Length: 310
Image (tube, rainbow, N blue to C red; front, side, top):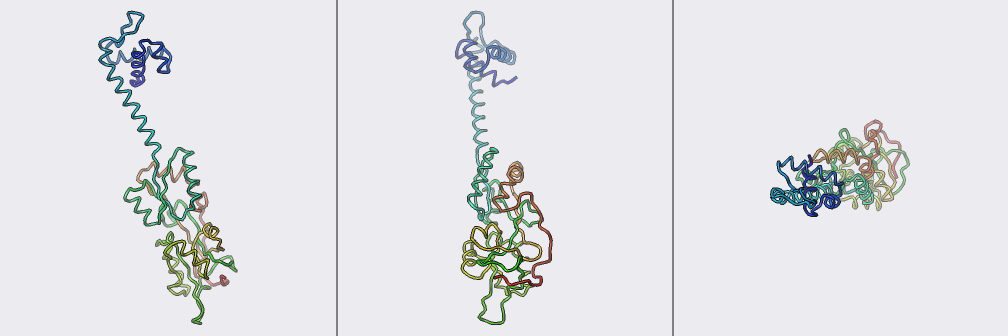
């Protein structure tokens, strides 16, 4: 028996002094109201109404039970309100601060269509991990190695002028013997200042004969992009970022560098919502290909040069 529904019928009929009017007020047929009250009387073991006359009157037992029935209804309504507020409470998610605001807005809209409410907190890689670890957010899109990533974003080099070849070989960035010749730098933005991206690129640069200062971490994406726009320096970035800054983009030779992302969440249901229900929408934000394709393998960075990037 649905005790709450039966109590609603009981309170409605007692308030109107009529089964017909009470049932109408409760939005149920009179026959349903009668059955529910009869079931409630059987459940409680006492008569709630005196039906000996045309008027419906509470019995002494019914008068004693009426306050409890009202409290139960109020509690059920309060629980329903609490459940609705909890369902509508946003899930705080730490996301890469490099995601374009418009794409983040599209993600929020797509989530709402699935009755998922997001509160996005853009942050860098270490901060996203910290926010998730300290439970300041419910979930985070964290940087991971490409082998364990749910989303992968190919990286390449971006410059203010076109590249003469379809790929960039690091050897072509070696400076000449003349001291006046500027050394072109590869600038790593903070989003890519993680061991699984920074260290392989640094080692490849050393193998290719680049000076240590030619592979450097920039203090911010804006600083790195400004250097690429205003000098011969190169920005390590995704194709999407290069297009946003109006830069020419070219992949590095050999196995591609890939940003890897995955979801970290304290609650398994939140993990499922982000990694399954919103997979394609998050991929769009990150600039990753939907479907998680793996790029083809090739030779390691630092292979023989095919041309000098301009």
